[in-house]
Image (cartoon, rainbow over all chains, first blue to last red; front, side, top):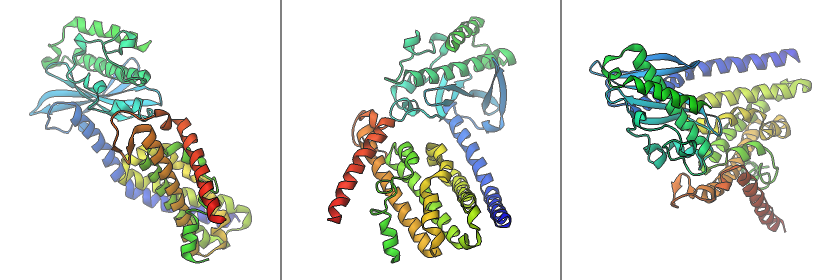
Length: 209
Length: 196
């Protein structure tokens, strides 16, 4: 009895070990490729490999991954991986910032578990909701849905998902700001007056409520 | 029983969803669209065929007292293999099905066929049985998924034929129960006529 069960377990685990070995590299490569694709969607054209230029930024006890996109050695943009809890679970987004203007370049949803047909519309890049963020400078725009007193139109019947997506973008923007103020990054840091930082910290406190 | 009959009986007479009413959890959970249902069905079918074959081959070496844990170990090994392969070859489908893939392990269809069929029949017959039941499961899930997708999002196999949204309730959880119930009524009505 013990012997047969032991043999079955042994054979099965050996089989699994072999399959794991074979699939490990492709799975890792696919994960990296996916990150790279998300980064490419959200920052201006670059010629380096941003997934290799990653830094961890701590802000309010949460650690964010920041990818730096460079073209000919010049920083052209930052992609910040951020997340917020939506209706069905965490929504992970990649938010890209144009280093020259300090505006949001584009956004991309990495993973989510929102309701299909409702909250899942946050993945629809051509839809009105996502288009609102294109080229937006949060300095002149309140990153909150209209229901919470902000300037973003929420998706109909999906306020929770819209709110989560918006707060993830706002969190990413705060990371982007702290990046500029902390690292004294000359080319992009100069374009933002100090009041913006204070202004946005306010915003963020509210969105955390 | 001929091999063909073994395969076709899973489609109608022993249809796992509408006749045996097994594996309801993935049926209700994954059929938000036709493609999702189909993906879940095919993944379950692969596990079913492989586990049926292996279990029928080793059944006589396994003492009766430990047969259930042995079957579970074999089934879970195949499920994990399918899960890893899916991550490599079908990453988008893997993301949609998510938690339901590991749950194939406890799907009563798989263990049910191992207990009811595979441990008393030859390897080939068991493979046919797994294929038949698997096809029946895939077909049922695809039909449920298609109905829910057409009514709920106005599309079929991700092809939008309607502008705007459908009746969203069919994509949400209540829609799963409604569609399953009505399809089951329809299925019983059709098969009852056949038997007369």
